Image 1: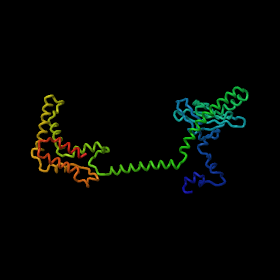
Image 2 (image 1 turned 90 degrees about the vertical axis):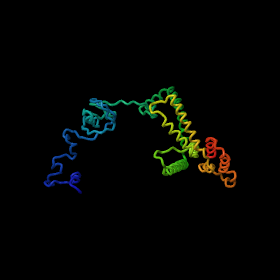
Image 3 (image 1 turned 30 degrees about the horizontal axis):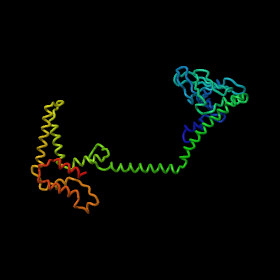
Image 4 (image 1 turned 45 degrees about the vertical axis):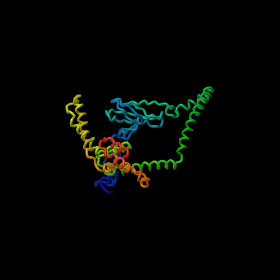
Length: 344
């Protein structure tokens, strides 16, 4: 053997003082082959592994011991039923160490609890679990053989049950037939997975692109694109709105709500600010206003625009703005509306 411990475990180890004339190793060491399990073998008790055959309640602590829980039980013979021995198993509750005694009953092929616990009563109906109660088959057969009317009534009930079960079985068969072709089912699933995989891969590529925002943004919509085009198509309009908002913030009070007088003052300040900005925009109009405006407008050309250059959007904007450049009294709204219309 590879080690001394393994040799002892396999009973191949012989002490130095042992001789064959002294008999077996167990006799020489005055020990039993089963070791500690046979400590009370002189009293007819042997320790074995016993498995609880059903759920029981401990009478000492009301602890529930489930079916299949194993114990080191003391096994001994306490009698005979004809030629069959009656065995008794003693063990301790794992919660309170109260002794529990279980005995075999060869007559009814059952286990009986004689001390320390009581069996948990678990009732069930064969109809609810859709099973056959074998204990009632003999009684039912004897009653049918004697009572003809009872037999007729049971036959009618059996036919009704068969009709109900037939409808149910037919429905289950139809469901199974719909998924009978494994190849078609697998093909549909693979197709669905491929489409989902393409969508996921496409989204991952979009997410990998560099962004200027730390916070993840929601997917853009057509409405968002339209509003962005209206705001950023004319830089002067954007700067004007920003300046007005900054003035409003600076004029607001930090001590709660504003009074009516402060609101009127704020409106007058905004109006004055707008007049100043409009005066800067149109006091000295540029010689080439059309070039300044069209340079900030993004126009989507159609395939036929290259052939019809005379009717292009850029030329229409330039013509209309050139004709109006001599009249600087036009409001900024007319330019904004024109830019917004062509930028969409």
